[in-house]
Image (cartoon, rainbow, N blue to C red):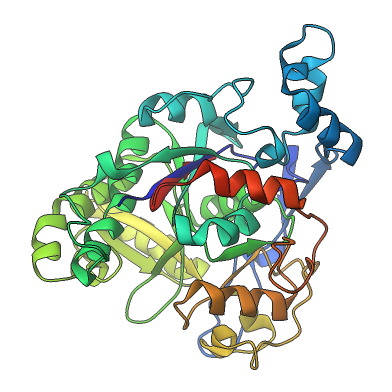
Amino acid sequence: MGFLLGLLAARTFSDNATRGQSVASGGGGRRHGGGGVPAPRMVAGQQTGEQARPSLASYKRLQRDPGLLQRKRGGAALLEEFEAAPWLLPPRTEALPHAGVHDFDALLQLRARPQGSHPSAVALFLFTADWAIIAQNSARRRAQLHASGLLLEPVGKGKKPTAHDFVVMSWIKPTVVLRALRQGHAVMVADADIAYAVKPLWASYLAYNEQAQADGAWLEEKPTSNAGHFVLLCTPASLSFAKAWVASAERAIEEGLTDQKVLPQLEEGSYLRCNTLCRCLHTDYNLTEQGQRQQVAVLRTYLPSHFVYSPNWCTIGSPDWVPAIDPCDWSVLYLHIICVSAAADKAAVLRAAGFWFMDDGEGGQASGLRRVPAAARRSQRRARLPPAALAVA
């Protein structure tokens, strides 16, 4: 038993990623009722155009002759066509630059990309084999790594995972975040139960942070931030916070606390949250005056995207309650399914919200643009993913 870790390239969550000068939407975000917590908004900029998408003809050619990728003439162009959907490539293809690389640090170097003023950025997410399809709906371009070697203690001694096993596995997240920060990468972390609306997510996060002089941005939740999606910039304060987070793991595991549930114990001493621009700038100023700015991280929080449509935390906890959400709304950077735990239930909510982009053979076709041919699904099953893993994009 172990996690799969996905390492995603910096552009993974945005087919229409921006380059060049970017302009933050005015005010840093919409204000909502119940405290007026702003949300990171879309950042406008020059569009580079969508990545090439594989044609059905190319897919069939590759299924007949996987060796086409290795040819000097046309092989590179064919591989580029499948960059947006590498799971459609023949199983275990060696044409990808990260093929056969099973070292986390080496994958970080392969997958990291410059982002904004940051020379290196990488996105990480964890998922299990049971969540493979929902993970593909979330991030379609990733290098994958079996993450059992990153666990703080062994798990899976019994036939079924225990509650203690899940607590231990949750601590892979801060562990890999710390390793990435130590190597100089800005880090975006995402759970698999999230769907994206083709927006420049990195650029929006960076503008949101830079406006407030913050070290990172997290989804607002009570009594603590939600660790399902966040960004930490590579700053001394972020590194100090990540070290404290990981250092609390042993005691937290003994107490049955996941990585997220221990966060309130670190607040004040290792990080401070702020939910308005004024509060963030005030927090930054106070910490600087106290000589603590490099030790305590300033984390700017924001409300879930669905608050624009229904200001209720658990509105999207059931497919019967989901409001009609416009994926093209600039306020909707992504949709995170909270208040429900089973993968099938989360998938049902994503379908109801119009954020399901996979044809997974489960009695319905994709609500978005991308589909997976049946042959590709069969090849995925033959690949036999380990019970859990880490993805680096």
